[in-house]
Image 1 (cartoon, one colour):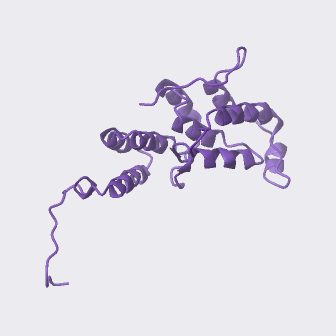
Image 2 (spheres, rainbow, N blue to C red):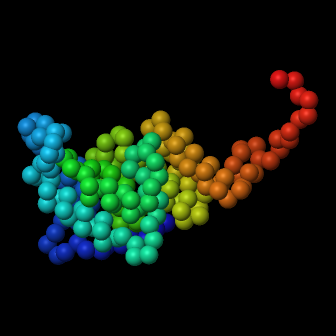
Image 3 (cartoon, rainbow, N blue to C red):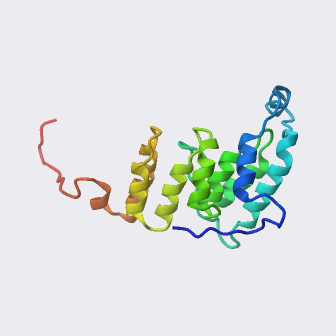
Length: 193
């Protein structure tokens, strides 16, 4: 399991977990929601300091000489590098994606298992935090742990995590592990169609 790293939370500031929950539960008016959904897409006032603090946290964890670990924002979204995800969050306007930021922070080990469990009830259903946990296990080379986590995903999209595991097995050329019946299938010549 990845080690949790505390990077730049200054004394007197809320914990990273608390900032994420505050952003996920922030109350914005209908007028702010409408404005955030239309050009020039202003960020609701209550979210601005929370967004800035999360962006600082994300930036502090950017790797110096790489793209960073694989990261996913939504249950069905593409896997991208951590650096790409952080760049997208900097470009976002309107209502900031605190759920998406949670996934990126999970990717770099910034949140403990306990913190993730505390944040989870506040995350929108489309956020891929469980899938990100599976990707972390894949990146760490622990495919058994990845399979176990994927098997526990009960939101109807657990298949996506198994697909991520399959992609890793294919990348490795591990046909026996890829198929649940292993390498027992043989081509049959002149088989009826």
